Length: 218
Image (cartoon, rainbow, N blue to C red):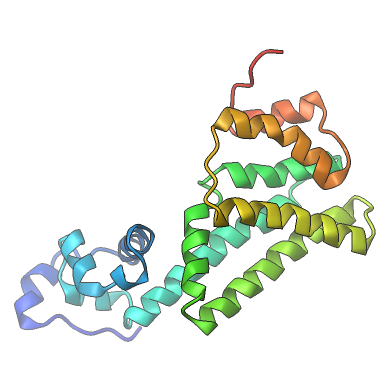
């Protein structure tokens, strides 16, 4: 790892706790989400963390390396969530779609604000736009294969995958905010629209349990 050693003035700080790679990355993400890409700068983050600026270089070569790590985290978490959900065990197509919808509702699995911010960043960088396009293709491919697993022909699976994915990206791009009860009430209709099969009561119950949602008694 290419590291810069602390300057003399910073030695007292850096000879103690320098933070960690995860601490610096979390600070970068927080600044990025709160203020934008221009806020991801070493000195302001160091002040926020109460660390010396030179501590940063124990973990990252430079700011560009930090930004690349931020993109890698976005890809691993947000795109990874789609892929894992689409590969999850399901006995029916409706259950498979519910597995995927869990991702849309659980921000510990998928961070919509991070997706929104990265898409905004992509308008300033061809390199980031290429990574966003690749992520979209990966997510669409995972959803398409999920439908094909349940017997949908490739063309139908492709259209259904796009219907699912573009609906969710629409939620993100428009920054839609719905009351949880309202959004959850729409889930059976979305499932039926996406795969042509209504979820069963037991499938919905498992879905609600995963999201720790208490459905109103009917």
